[in-house]
Amino acid sequence: MKIFQKYAAEFFGTFILVGGGTGAVIGAGLTQEGVLAISLGFGLALMVALYAFAGISGGHFNPAVSLAAFLDRRIGFIDMVGYWVMQVAGALGASALIAWIYNREFAAATANTLNRQAGVNELAGFFGEAVLTLVFVFVILVLAKSESHTKYIGMGMTLAVVHIVGIGMTGAGVNPARSFAPALVGGTWDGFWVYIAGPALGAIVAWALYKIIIEGDLSLGDDLAEVKDAITEDVKEAIEETKEVL
Image (cartoon, rainbow, N blue to C red; front, side, top):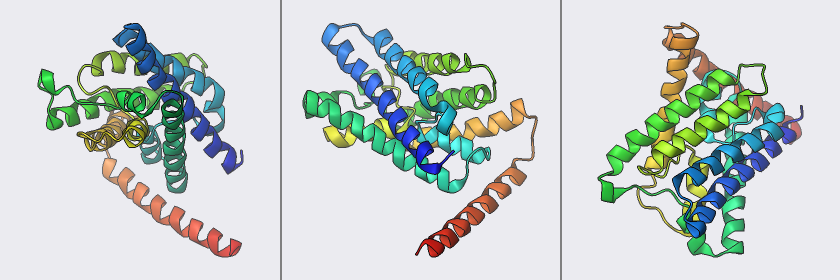
């Protein structure tokens, strides 16, 4: 598999996920369908993207998933960074398209927001995003090892459940690319750090729990040392390849 194919798959897959999910937010708002419609919009959009592109790139479409996959040594450091770039680009493309079709106010309406009226402050939102992402990423790490194509249904339904629970708290970001794109296009940044830091922490804890519960590996210190060595080796390799090209 060529590297540009994987990056293109992450771009277009994230475009489908964010476009489908945030498009459902707008559709639900216009038709008064509510939380279930939005949750199914994100879950079904993820399933569509997975069936289309998971065989090429692994089907991350989410920087938090890529971070956990890197920690588990399923992808390299350079690929993780490349995936992040393409995921953000895909999400921005989806939000920009929504803003062009409707206007920036509609794009802003799809941004994640803390339910401050219900008492969800930034600290609560941070932990809420961390736990929601933990659940989602943990399931992704487990199901990704399955040989059955029905695993994509499980992944999509997990995202739907996370949204059903989380929309009323934080809007259920659980994906920094999905949170960043509407915020940038719509110009709304209230409590934005929650949607970066929360999923990052959730992804790290999800990986740790996966190693402990699923693989029975309690020597996480050794695993982290391997991750550190892998970063060094990947960066050195990338530098050497760049020198050869130049």
